[in-house]
Image 1 (cartoon, rainbow, N blue to C red):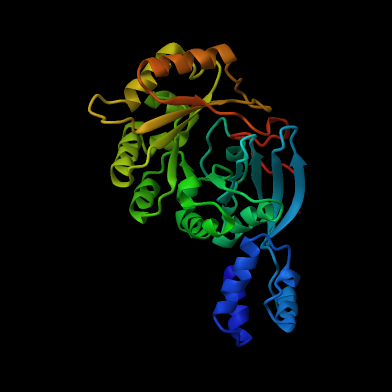
Image 2: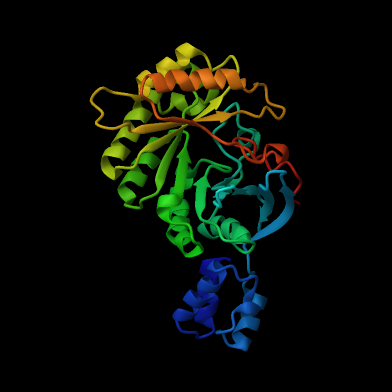
Length: 334
């Protein structure tokens, strides 16, 4: 719900300040509407139903994967499209992938969102309403800001959402904010004091190749981004995740794995600053092809031989285009 409009409506009705906290507590616990908020006066519930929409987003579509992943297409009040994902894991984790913008102004070549027309930043309420949609279905406990948009370009709203996510059951330590390497945002996050995790979308260890794949590298070169991440680690003592999408014949050769290890590891490191997540790529109409299992395994082995902590991400929702880099809100929302 629009939390600012909620507070204004309650103040105009002469309600005490604690009413806003009551309403939010119900929503965060998964209430489906104002009618379930039984400790609010009936007349107030009717007023809120009329004047404050229960969600700032309109659900337009939903897709459910064979693996239990759920992708939802939303539209904002002014018709801007966005998507969010619920990922279910066998160990019981329920992780959300949330969007911070409608579209993205940074045109990474392998990312479907980057091909969309950028609309605008999302508000804190619009970010939270993505999470609340899934919380109304079941408990959730993890969150990654790896959906549509570059979170560091809308960091105030993202951090505003992070302040409230623990009320839904998602602690800051189970929240990860991803970036393509927007250094001012990395620095702001380090100064925020909020114990969220940082993930860097890297995808190439060479400046020229990374610039080809991710034009933002021309503005914030890789060497400077790595130093900003090291400064984040020094300040927050939180290991930085490195996201590396495996693209066949582009960034998956043995020599490129060694270059990545040299970039991330220093002999002076008391413990590894970075942990690499190798991400199998689902082409889904892209100009790129995903690396073979054998190539991914060899790349992983090369990193491990140089002491780099590395995992291969379990890809979720590939059959509904909900995997990393696939959110594109292609359905009409008008």
